[in-house]
Image (cartoon, rainbow, N blue to C red; front, side, top):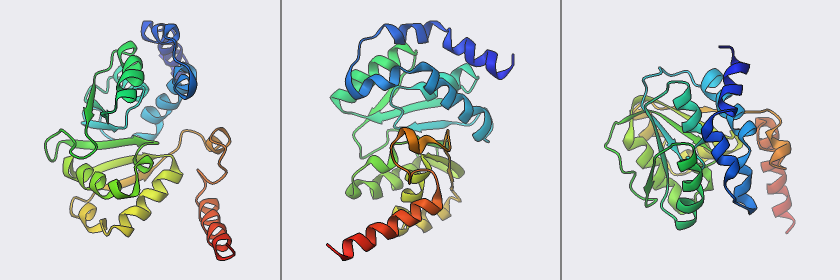
Length: 222
């Protein structure tokens, strides 16, 4: 089955039909966009993800669980969804997860409930850098703890990935990652994602750096 037929099969699945039946409004409704989310994750697992299919994968901040749904359909069956234990997240994203046949582990934002050296891969789409500055150091340490030696971290968007690397340097955590030889791979699902997110600084490193300098110059005149 070619890629287009695989995507069509996913869009026609009973799980996706169930998603269209749920009634969720406001900012959570965008996660009902099956075509967008399936194509996004299909591209990731098919073209960006380079690990073995038997790898244990932690989806950090799994949200509506589209990543896990597509992964399972592509026979990536060691995929684990993890999200924050907050009522709104559990109720709204939990509804999506149920429709997509996904189980989710919820955690307290402090201790990731998996044993050390468990995961070959961490996938974080638009999640890590949403954390407040005081919590990022602990999260990075926890992700390192549950990662195996030579683990790969796939972090999106690229803008968030750039900020993550800066935070690692600021909090002097580079050595912690180096001890396990963890590799951080910045990725994006579309070079034009900046249009959708209304930020021209998201996906292009040179523009990201330019934006930082512009902000610094503005602050000088405040």
